[in-house]
Length: 263
Ligand SMILES: [Mg+2]
Image (tube, rainbow, N blue to C red; front, side, top):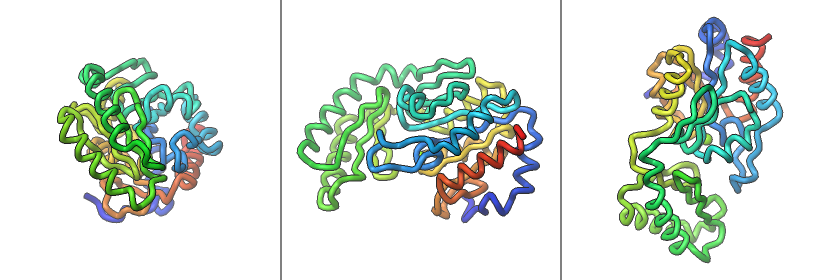
């Protein structure tokens, strides 16, 4: 694992060499915390205009594909990005649409009854606790606790552990102020990115990926040192090759990339 990767603006020459010359470039990115600033409630998150404009121009260019990979469900992601020419991968890529792909991971689909039971279980376990809510994402569930009172955080932990013990066919993942349960299928953003590359007929060297969270590390790893990866945030422990500070910084990078690729 790399330590403290350099900031992208310190490597413009290298990045221009890597990203400017590939005949077809895949611009793949996470959404929350990478393109769009995180809000206390996920439904309040919006794609900033600067990022939207740059991504729209990139997606319209024949030499570029844009893909957004998110933990959000597919319908929510499509609505929120408003990028009709992009490929969208929801639920960490368990569902993919666009670029000739229309995919739902079959084992995840089959696990829906277990997910229903887990949602019911968690809603009962946490009812009455303010600032904690369970989001049904179709193929996965998220337990959000960003607005929880600190005194209630132990309830979150207890409920999450009880849920994991009771529904052993679901896998627990911890993100930023969110605990997620997903069907226990060999799938993550790394698999999703590889599937995207295969579906689009592109090598890993033709891809860049930007992400801010632990789930994005799988996508950084999937590029195997061949593609170009960016960690958004200050965490020094990342597999990514380059760093961006925050969502304003990613928007600046996308504007720079647009000039490089589209003009
Ligand atoms: Mg994120």
